[in-house]
Amino acid sequence: MAKKSKENICECGTHCNKFNGCTQAVYGLGFIGAAIYYISTATGFWMGVLGVLKALVWPVFVVFGLLKFLGM
Image 1 (cartoon, rainbow, N blue to C red):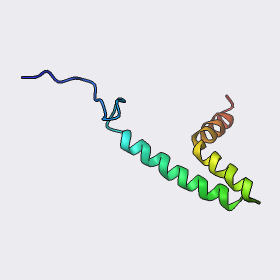
Image 2 (cartoon, rainbow, N blue to C red):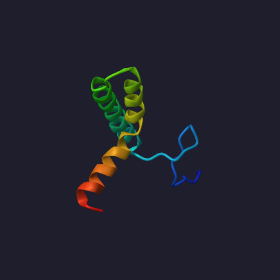
Image 3 (spheres, one colour):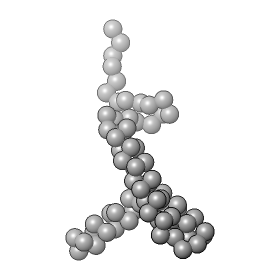
């Protein structure tokens, strides 16, 4: 009988866990929501492009706002 490995390795070579799909879904929905928000408030084309770039890194803004709120 073959010994089972404790580590789960995905097809892409990275480590997997049972929450991997959930975190990707949350990030994806957050990206879509952030992109819609930033593009809808853009005043021009380049501000819309900047909005898409901001939407890619929306977790940074969430963590920054949370730390600012907590006074850290």
